[in-house]
Length: 400
Image (cartoon, rainbow, N blue to C red; front, side, top):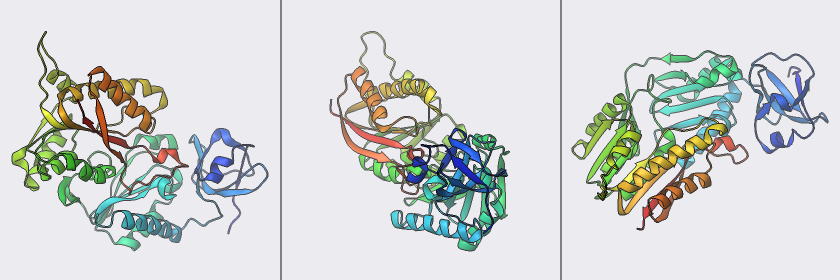
């Protein structure tokens, strides 16, 4: 194996890496023993010259090194095949009947900067680190050898790539693909635009929760806020909801959710509106002086996009979360259920619950927690890498 440039860490900076976190920040580095090329392999050692691992270097990024392995490794096609097989084994154990799921989840699968989503017989790759970008051809070759997919698409169109010194990239990189793809989630079909849609096409991290929340839907009047392609709404309809009303700001998403309702034979019990959800909730809960609001819904689902991208914006995000919960609780009948989610890593489950309870206090509602949710197991959580845990949720019954 060729000699690698060595990144020496400052005293006290090694413990986090030893414990399993793969990121070495610029401020943690004492020195480099030799010039390292951006995107190339380096070895990482503590200040006593003890080996901590091998990873990709990038001087342009705040994360100067993304550690791949605690030992010296050759990062070739065989390496990627082994890592991807290991990641696949986790999905096959945890989601044995799923045909669409996240197959590689970056740090969760010890491949920092690489995401691979499987949508039926098509793979979607997203690369957010320069070291992975330089080995894109090798990664694609490994995926083709392991799975022989109909096509491999790239959705490396996230803003974070600019912090790694990369331009965005989007398109078909292997095989042939055009149009939308019918994706199976829990036995329901979702027509999905995986080339131009949000994220890489669907919110795969909610796959298990879609089914879990539907247990509260039988015979219910359901409001699905921030509904996107109808994940929660259509599962609720299939579970026997009397009526499902879906709201999303995107007219394209609303149209797609109604098409999906028709495909799955539940359109007669579904409606959808392209609206600003905050404005709609505010209008529905507005009352005249001395007028009493009559709650309309038995189940309300709140699954908004992240309100915060950094710690500095958390206070503003919490105000937003509280506002929608105040409105939603006013629309819930006594005995009804609120299923609510937060996808911000910077808002902990406890802080999120406290915000919901603050809204309950303001609306004079008492809640009973009946379920706790996390991200689907194809988005594994490594506790020593807190960034891998971001989605949290609760089902809360209105006691009075």
